[in-house]
Image 1 (spheres, protein in one colour):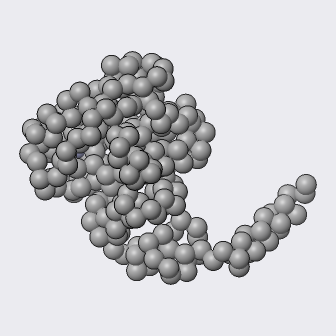
Image 2 (cartoon, rainbow, N blue to C red):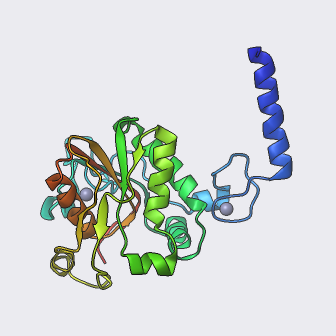
Length: 247
Ligand SMILES: [Zn+2]
Ligand SMILES: [Zn+2]
């Protein structure tokens, strides 16, 4: 088909789609120009990480890039058995609303926006050779919630990049008690032996370990340990949001 005609038909399809299904903001009902976008009000209260950030957890690092460390204090003191990490959002304001709506509010379509934002933030680290592995949840929790929000994002990332999606690469055997309000030492101890490798052979592969939010990093460390023992060659952590300071 002639390129101009194709473009014309493409534009026609976009106009038609917008008329039939007006695009709304990811976080509210406001009309927006672009799919998976935010309206100006939601944008202003959603803290995207831009500029210098910690190499391992993606938390913004004021003053980095001018001779200062490229790791945050947390990542210098805790085990981070992965190679690099990026976060899209700081976990406050609109970011917190989005993560909670995706996790508990059945707003599964938010995984699409989350995956697109993650890809934009970490495109240079990902390729069609990457395997996307979600942080697993226990099957009882999966039954109750009906979906694993991190798996929804990881699946979309696989589709967007052409990489593989391996939802069973990690298995969570034990339902761990809530890790909120625990010390970091308790969190890391609670996860001991809770996660193991599934059936996928990931030896020599590049894995992007996907999670919706990172607090202490204990769960991610447990997952990365298992992946490393399975012979994974490189582990990139991808986060929708990073809690800026341990509560
Ligand atoms: Zn909005
Ligand atoms: Zn860090």
